[in-house]
Length: 219
Image 1: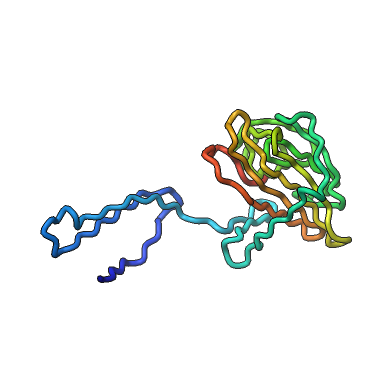
Image 2: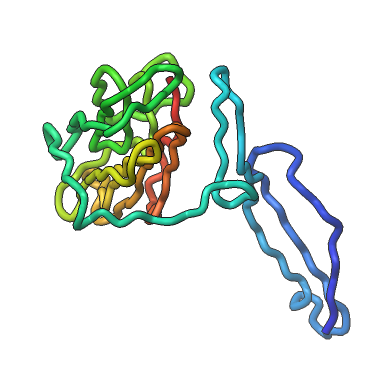
């Protein structure tokens, strides 16, 4: 038994790379048995970014200084969002406090069955958009923007916690499913914080074979 140490190596760009490792072992009458190859796809990880033009940063829970993942279960205590439709539907709900988003004070937020939120004018769409882009909804937060719906077990609820000036609003998507894509589902939530105006997005269940959803935010 022996150990082989390889030099440290990191991808030189954020592109996905194909890495092949071949190990040749001696002492075997059949050299074909000593050739081991493994093909692995590696992608450079990004755990923080920014600022943008309005000094917004983002940071992942997997890095130092990032938020701590702590799912807030409001399946029994939260208020159900009353959408205009279970598919491509929307609703406007109160935030419960003044929330500043790109230098504008907001008191309401629009919630969409298709996995995103926005402030201001209603813009219901099932399409994905590159972030940032001139098209699509304005002032939006994409948790998992795609063609989703709330039929079957899927529900969206919201709940206000805390007291002024430290209140926070939780908007939780539980077992939301893709339209016409079988039983595969998502559970995710957004948390808006008073005073700091921070936004935390949490992902409880993301396993899916459908990879076109969008995540992010823009004004």
